Length: 261
Image 1 (cartoon, one colour):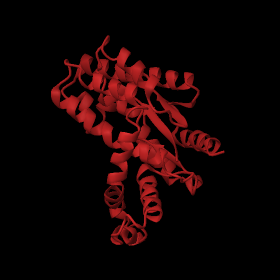
Image 2: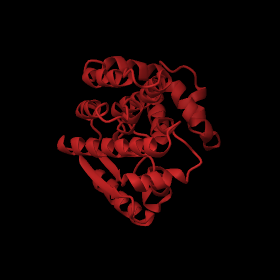
Image 3: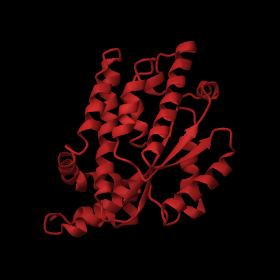
C-alpha cells in the first residue's frame, strides 16, 4: 500500500477536509482510511497465514458488516505480532529517523508528560505505516493523523528548539507517495482556535502571545516539512486555508486520482 500524508498546523482545516473527502462520491474504491486499510491488511494477513492464525473468529468478524464497529480492535489483535516483527525488521533502515524522534522527545525544556505522550502517539502510527508498506495490497491510504503530522508530538515550539529536529525528522522520515500541506496564516489559525472548545496538548496552558508563538511554530514546521519532502522527490499539494471546502475537496480528489495512476 502507498500512503498520502496530511500536514498542517492546528486550525488549518485538516479534519474537516478529511471528513468531506471521505464522504465524497469519487472516493469509492480510490483509497482507504487508515482504519479501513488496517482491516484490509488484517484480512490479507489471515488469508496468507491460515496455518498460523488458527483462531477462526477474527476472520469471521472481519468479514461481517454487522461487526464493522469492532474491525479496528480485531485488526489490531490480528496484526499485533506482525507489527512488532516489522518494527524490528526496519529498525536499521529507520535508525536515523528513530534517533531523531528520541532526540526530539527527550528535549528537557518540554514537560515530561508531553514527551511521553508524544512517543505514545508516534509509535502506533509508525507501526501502521510499516504494516501498510509491507502489505501486498495495491491500495492508497490517506492519513489525516499521519506520520508527517506526528512531528508535532516530538518537537518544541520555541524558536531555536524546533528547527533542527524538524529538518532531521523530514530528512529521514519514510517517504509517503504524496503530501497534502494545509497552509494557513498564524493569525488566521489563532482566530480559529479561539473559537474551538477543544484544546490540543501542544496548546494546553498557553494563552495570548504564547499561544500565538505555538501556532506560528506549527506553521513554520509544516512549511519546512513540506519543502523538505518536496525536495526529496515527493509530490506535494498545497491547500490554502481561505479556499471554500468544496474547492479543497476537488483539488484533493484530483491529487489522489493522479497518485493512483
